[in-house]
Image (cartoon, each protein chain N blue to C red):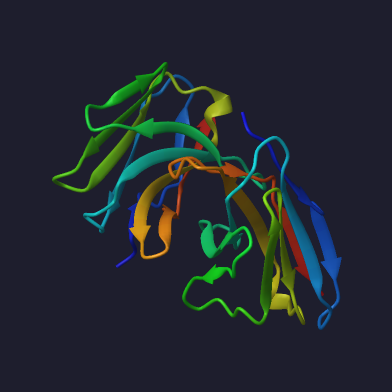
Length: 112
Length: 115
């Protein structure tokens, strides 16, 4: 089983739609959680951290459920510029340090 | 925010040759640098972790004799793909962090094509 799994996608939604992405992780010792965004042929960029209490940044809301080992990202009022691949990232402590483990990503296309 | 650069951004080489990719932290000292590889439509896979002045720690399945990593200074790490083969063609991305283990700054990536 992969350490981090995500909805395979792709998600094709019209502008203005609300879309939700899910992510599950298998290592209960995972320490921190993030959503990254990656545009085609570019490096990933941090979108937002995910906190246990849930957090919101404009149109984006992230939730964490440690008991279910589940993370979500909700995007409201989708814009064309939101089209990208969204990567769920979990920090896992290894013997030699803390590593970022990336999920496979979910591709979003927002259509006009 | 912190800036990480990579050079070259794109390289095409012939099978059997070696290619060196540089990763630099421009405005901070990177105690740790990471090298990732991303194949088309797949996620980033960590190849190795390098700490300045010590040997890199490679992930399972990554050949350390093929992917040579040097982290000689706090602002520079290099990845050398030796005896490259077409299956090494990929997007190689480095990241760097200072003392905060929860933050990594990513370079823009290097697209390697081996013909």
